Amino acid sequence: MIKHLKNDWKLSRILEGGDGERDASSAPPGAAEEAGRLAALRDELGKLGREKPPADLNAAIMKRVHDSEPRHWIYTFLFKPRHVLLRTSVASAATAAALVLLVGGIMVHFLVPGAGNDLEEPKTAPAAMAPADSDNPEALCPAGSGGEPVPEEAMRNVRFSVNLPHARDVRLIGDFNAWSEKGIVLDGPQDDGSWSVDIDLEPGKYQYMFVVDESEWVADENADAWVDDGYGHVNSVRYIM
Amino acid sequence: MANERGRASSAAIQVDRSRETAAADEGEARKYEESCILKCLDGDSEAFRPLVERYSPSLYTFIARMVTDREDAREITQEVFTRAYRNLVDFNSRYRFSTWLYTIALNLCRDHIRHDRRTMAEKRVDVDVGLLMVVDPVEQKLDVKRRYEALLECLDRLPQKYREVLVMKDVMMLPYKEIQKAMHLPIPLLKIRVVRARRRLCGMITAMEHGEKSK
Image 1: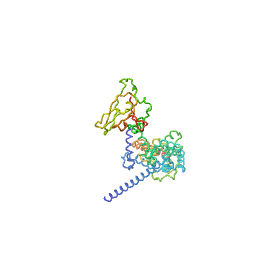
Image 2 (image 1 turned 90 degrees about the vertical axis):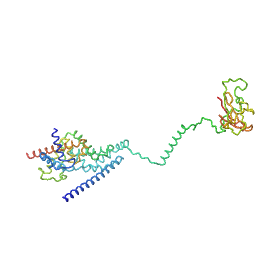
Image 3 (image 1 turned 135 degrees about the vertical axis):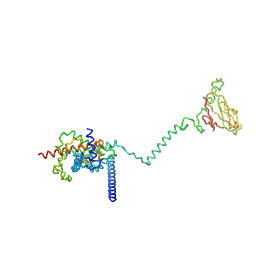
Image 4 (image 1 turned 180 degrees about the horizontal axis):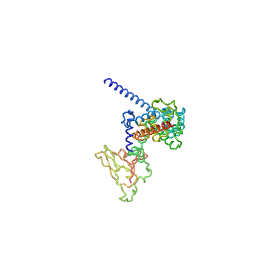
């Protein structure tokens, strides 16, 4: 079998090298006759010519192709690979800008400290006043100021300070001393121009003011809140916990 | 000697130019085919018509030589193109479109032969003498029509594996590379099979001629 295979392979190389043609006379003497016969047969088959197709064959083929179109359309619509073309247009640019603003707003809201925090009291506006019970004198005074002894553990040591580098005299006047004009004298000025004093207070809410050089009433910009005193002044408010 | 060399070199140049021209034409044809296929994939079914008109004659001849019955050949040809159109999305443009068509045709012919129990000789297509090319009368022992009828009859009776390669190689004159892609067989095996197919066909024709002689 292998011998026949080799002989046939040699014969095929004689008849055609690749797809080219070789002269059968180049075959070895033993195979020349057969090579010649087979080459002649090859030429005969090549001269058989085309089989004449039916005249309406192409029309029938195209009819079938068109008839298969709906399913083909559905198949290609669902499964064919598509090219995606991105067109820059005003609408696309506006959509992209809106998305950027939305994402940026979200990031600022959550990442920037203090941004959009509605829970804190506005400290820069004296008009943002917290309502205080100014009509109730007892509410202004700390509990226990009527002569009852207060346990030490209930007292809180609270510092009051204000920055007035050019003042000569600064005093603290408020609920805790019944708004006496003598007030509590602050120590200062320090090197940075601040005046301060530490006093013991019970937990509660206190209104107060600074009196500068015995003539000027000044609010505390570091207070917890501010309230209108009904006389055209703005009192500072501190909450002691 | 110098003249011979000059003639040889000019002949070589002419061959090279003709090959370049053929290659350029082939390249243009393939580009046109690819554009038609892309249009079909975009939903333009009419773009398939140029491909049908180009390949239907040769494909019909191939199928007719394989299954012999004219009606069957017509039906199978239509089915080949319909299947090709439906599966265009799977066509790999690295290969020739004709090779793909022949692959589909070969498979459909094999299926048809496997299911059709009628003998090939009963369904053989009548030879149209007008289509036959001129044959060297010195080498023919029978008249033209009888010779070619014998050829076709013997071709029909060849075992299927021999008939396939012989029709593709010698009747359709397809290059071995295209046959290899259609049949998925290595080229050396194809060449050996072609030789054996020719040998078998030659023997059958000789036996038929001897049988005619003895009558």
